[in-house]
Length: 309
Image (cartoon, rainbow, N blue to C red; front, top):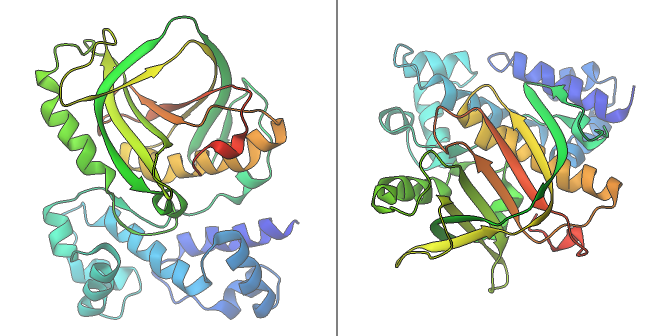
């Protein structure tokens, strides 16, 4: 068994037993490692200390359970291993900036600690062959775009740390407001294609330490509109990463993070492919009915290192 498999075994165990007392000695025995080496290897592969990871996974699970109003908050707290209602409320607010009651009343998207799928750091996926793992269905293929495709929407400047923290750090999703604003105002855009795709694009910003995120819908032409930004998928060969998840929140939070980590951290370097410096997320609609999406990367002579990661 590889070392990453030993850590994955404990990650699976943790998720199955979040409501139980979890100790490092117990987990290290499951991994067949010494407590010292287990903690060291866990931190290197998961990017979090063991006990902090457990706390953040309990809170991530809490965001899912709170959606059910039939569950009392005190019961959720105790079922997930928190000492009391007060302890749970304090920890939740320190992590997400709101109390469980406030979140239940307004369940906005939250960045949260994702359970890693360490297999994605080591497996190599052939083009055109689907990979099914831990609730993810992923397929990588190529597509030639012969004519440009236009999009119109809004954009927001974001710190690069936001990308670094996806799937690891917890808090309110700052891009949700951008998408909500676009959806509120898109009715006034007669340039949008009826039932056209929506796209979210991360690309380099002119200011060091930041990137720009564009959120918009498919447009009929490149004319644009006052007060809105435009984006174009230009003709060329694209790498298309298609994937699906159980629901929209899992798709845009957990699964998108895992797929990006796999594509940029494992697949592209091993293929020695070079891409343009942008990453486009393409949806039928950026809404709660959506369970699948595509990442579009344009193949180019530039280096992969130019991409925001």
